Length: 133
Image (cartoon, rainbow, N blue to C red; front, side, top):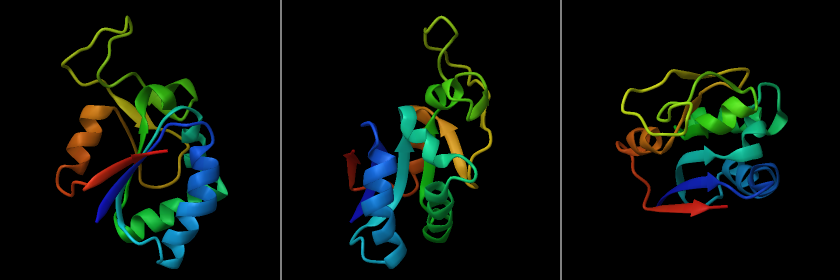
């Protein structure tokens, strides 16, 4: 079974991912194939360069081809991305011309995006289930 995780609740990355999911992935006993992880709000902080959890996660993600993506607006607000929102104008309205937003000071392999980017990134290896934590 293929799974994608969406980290939306406070501390879901720093606790649930760091203390439960990541150790199981490292040991090879998680029981499912994780194809992607999407991070919202303060959960993006585990993806900072030098963060012990983020560095471990980046290694596992590279070995297992796991997508690591953080919300563009969340990353911009927390200085973990540069540029501007990918699919929204400054006034909050939607747009159809993609904005430039790049990760900044994050662990290797992290992408920045919004839902259209997540769907596109997972299209070639779609999950069977999406779990929100």
